[in-house]
Length: 85
Image 1 (cartoon, one colour):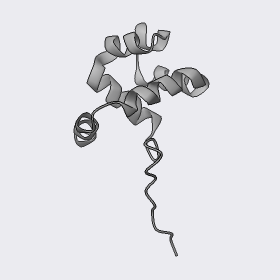
Image 2: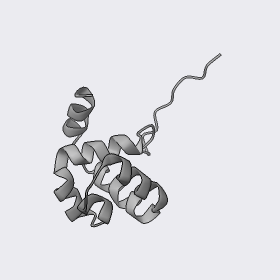
Image 3: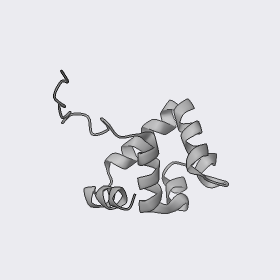
Image 4: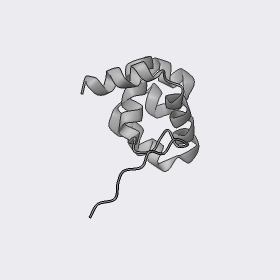
């Protein structure tokens, strides 16, 4: 028997992958805009989703900044990006 899925109203990141977060931020801001918001090399020089994920998984302070930035995206942009996949 499976348990019913419970929404987590206090955790906007619940069930959202880091890849989705980075992809939506790039769609909303572009790599240059993302590099201005979070000035790290993986966004500034030869950026890619793969290199960004590797860096963010190893660097908690940068991941926290990226997640906070994503939480401030308007829901319309997040839905639009999800529909385009």
